[in-house]
Picture (cartoon, rainbow, N blue to C red):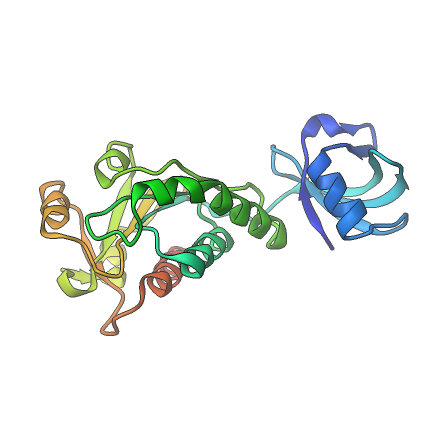
Length: 243
């Protein structure tokens, strides 16, 4: 059943009217939705609506609400990713999979060994946000995550987080499991995960982490590509929280 984001103001009584041009174009032109077909809609208050299409014209789609309830498609803590962007498809994979894994937002950070320069990165942010939007619809996210502006590690770390986790396989002090056993993630906490480029973090960046007393953690004995480390790292954090 297709899943689309709407605004609560689109709802009146027992009907939802879709007039947003992007949603309308996708539903009416691309999916060729018809009367009688079912749609999953969700608003900014994370209320999920199971609906059936009752009318379609040249500018709007009208749906009757059959059932509504708070969405459960969300984590119980706020998970963020700060990551040094990779080239081409690898970065698109990271944006898609991190969305599926429930991140609230991704900070693309320029690191000393970043594969792309700032002028290239600035042109890609809009595309990355679109990938996150589409992934949110496909996996029925309760809330769409944000791709933040291109930034630096120093600026990201100015924000307040309850926990900051740095994955650094070759310089790790302990495993993720060991760290989370002693420092359990609590409901409602803000957790930042930092993952570097394929070339790893520089000495200057390691000095920054050490100066801020941030944990340097490993995911095991295997050396993972950066995009794989994102998926495994986020997935293991969620697993340890739920365990």
